[in-house]
Length: 210
Image 1 (cartoon, helix red, strand yellow):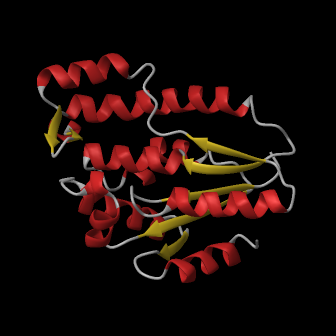
Image 2: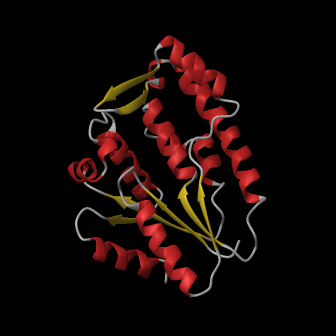
C-alpha cells in the first residue's frame, strides 16, 4: 500500500464524509484508493455472542423504527476476559484477508479499523485502560507503520441531531469519552468537527498534507 489515512471517531462524527472528500481529491490526482471498513468482526467470537444474547448480556431495543444494541459484557468477568481475546483473533483474520487484496499502488482509506474495534471493546467491557494492556497494544500494532490517524470529536447533542440512529443511544456519551481518551492517550491528532465543517476539513487536509 502506498499511503494510509485513517479517520476514526464515533458514529456521526463525520468520518465517511471526510474520507469521501479525500477520495475525491486523490482521484483528481489520479491516485488509486481502497476504502476499507473493518469493525469488530465476528468469526470465532460468534458463539460467545449467541451466549451473551441468551443470558441477557446483549440486548436490543427498538425506538421509532431504529434498533439499538447494547453489550453489557462488563457484568460478566468471564465474558470481559474472553471476548476481547477472541476479537483480537477475529480482527487479525479479517485484516489478513483484506490486506491480501490491497495493491501496492493504492492509497488506503480506513473508515473503521483497529482503534474502532478497541473502542467498542472498551465500551462493552467498561475497561477504560484496555488500550494500555498487552491485548490493547497488540490491537494497536496492527496499524500499518505509515498510517496518518485522525480522531474526530463531536459534541454529543450535535451527533444526536446529525445522525438519527444515535438519537436514543444510551451509550453515546460514553463512546465519545472513550474516543477522546484514546486520542489523548495515544497522542493522536484530535480534530473538533462540532461546528465548522470547512474549518475541520482544512485542518484534516493540512494534517494529511493533501
